[in-house]
Length: 277
Image (cartoon, rainbow, N blue to C red):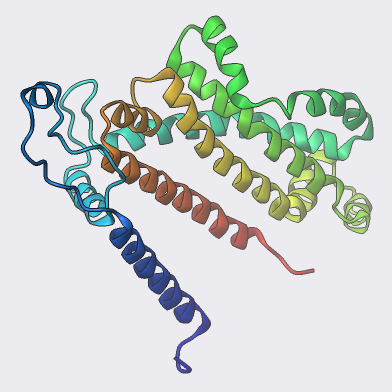
């Protein structure tokens, strides 16, 4: 182990924790007891059927192999592959997220560069920001009258605040010396914003974007449970209604994996824009 790098040691430890956790999970699941001799009434009422319980990890792995071996099949409205369901969810997340970025980043620049704009808009931000995104869903469904657009609107609402606040904070925190140098070189406001303020505030802006994508992926699952139809959230709810706990656990793990991948992408972007003074 002394020859291993820190990253390799962390990877070995993670795998060890995973294996131990799965073994504990496997042995803690009680075996299903076979039914003995049943009365006619028990047979009619399904008394011989095994009771539903938490499945062992081996069953979840089997379900994962089954689903991931053909993730894009489409056998009807309530029977689509996990790849299609995740695709619908990612589409909704990215649509609402990008709409939020188009508004939040320029508005954050305005708030960060103008104290008047900050004082005028801050009360509205502080009132709207704490509202749960799902609280907007009934109003969105009533006004928009489309479940797909309503889910995208909810993603828009939950994504806008971290990006807006972090952008304003990053812009306001740019060193005054750098802005003064831009003025010395007679750079206009737009050129100063793009050549001086944006590069300096980029790490903080990307941090806000990273927080927003995590919240958006969290909210879309709940939103799809409400509006139904398609998406990973609907998939979880539909499998729960079918009492298929194996599929429920598998879908929960897939939600976590996709969320981790989205966060990793923004983590890479964050390292790209980072700089040392």
